[in-house]
Image (cartoon, rainbow, N blue to C red; front, side, top):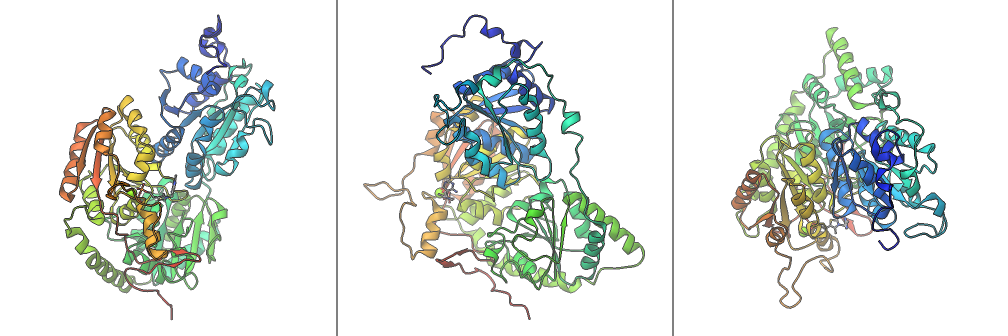
Length: 616
Ligand SMILES: Cc1ncc(C[n+]2csc(CCOP(=O)(O)OP(=O)(O)O)c2C)c(N)n1
Ligand SMILES: [Mg+2]
């Protein structure tokens, strides 16, 4: 950059932050990250963060820096690293535009309650409000915090040396306590370089000994036990809180002890092994018949760590996903803001889901030890077995189709079935995500990963790299739309440079197909700006993704038959290197389910199976 000297001034290379004895601001930040066991910082350079890069350079044996080709990819990598490992990591971006590429990833993490620590550079404090290069100054000095405030848990902007260590530890604590979420530590240029009098804060004093596993009010636990024991048609609905709250073992115990079927929001899939007899699968607009039809008839619904968003809830239209009331809802969440947001509650309990489940199991032990027994579940479970059969018959033909382009239902199943049980599949956003949610059968809480709150294209493209770094020994496949992959094909360089062996399946339907589907479904087929066509021939157009991969030094293949797709995934995993499969998959179909979705003013879709449930 023109205003930065190309060579450091004499003596600059011996900055205190790098020599170890006395630290500068960046040295404290990096030291703190190491103390919090952060293995990776994902980032992209700029003049605003070279001070911090220098501190990372000094400690590169203890913390690894991964340089990406677009900042949002750094955010998605940090996000999914956490979803797989439970360990938060950090990102590092420069002042101005570098950090302005971060909000999409921050928002995604925020709305899916995923923590990561975003360090953003800013202009020197001495230049605040002077309109220095890349300063956001027109409304307020060094105002990057305003641009991300709505998209993270909190922004910290230390402007003196004394404030820095405090902000460093407070930001971490805010990130991991209560409902987790990303935080931003916005650091002016000079603060990175400022000598620090204080030592680095110690996590044992400020974060690692804080427990947020709060229990529910004991009277509430007793009431929940009573409601569940007396229910004739109970359903447990699980969301992300169960998966990332580490409550899957307790969930299974509860479901089996009371023989209660378990439905999942898309973010909850995998909280219970999909092959378990009590697992109903996805409840949503495109949910399975057994999940939706059981959930909407439930007399008691125990919702654990779920948000009841519109796609899960069939746009809150009663009788498709849920019928609350008359269903009596027990809603448990660490964040009381989610309780009573969309549905009236018979019993709302603010609690950590795992602690609540342990309390509930103890209460059931006590009651059942005294002879109290649940209502006979046979008729309810028999009815559900019937719904399951109807669903299985409904979807069976799709699995047999052997077409080119590949039938999307078949594609989802082929990819899912060829993966070993411990594989991680990261989905991007689009119609492929809906197919995957409907037809994949995750067996572990962190084996099918998608974004449900913010839904940014590129989440899976970048996120898959984070997944693989988090679990190097687990096979990792990214299933991503052709739109999103082309938007973020920059990941090929990162995968190559760091040899991150992710298999990319580019779900190539030559369109922004999910949106084109809406034009077809809600706008009488008036299509504009949703498909990719050669302007001369009108034939479907896209780059050849296999060749694109090869140009980046990565093996790439093209497939257009279902059986070849499974083989290609297997072959890609076997290489132990990054791999790209350009899969020609049909884009004209949408996954029909037992629920609906309303676009207000434009109409409501029709369920593909069953009909609206109207209680007597
Ligand atoms: C960054 C971003 N831009 C736009 C959208 C709106 N959007 C949602 S899905 C979608 C289409 C995605 O196309 P593709 O990646 O090819 O996936 P497909 O739906 O075809 O499976 C778009 C444009 C979005 N979610 N994120
Ligand atoms: Mg597409």
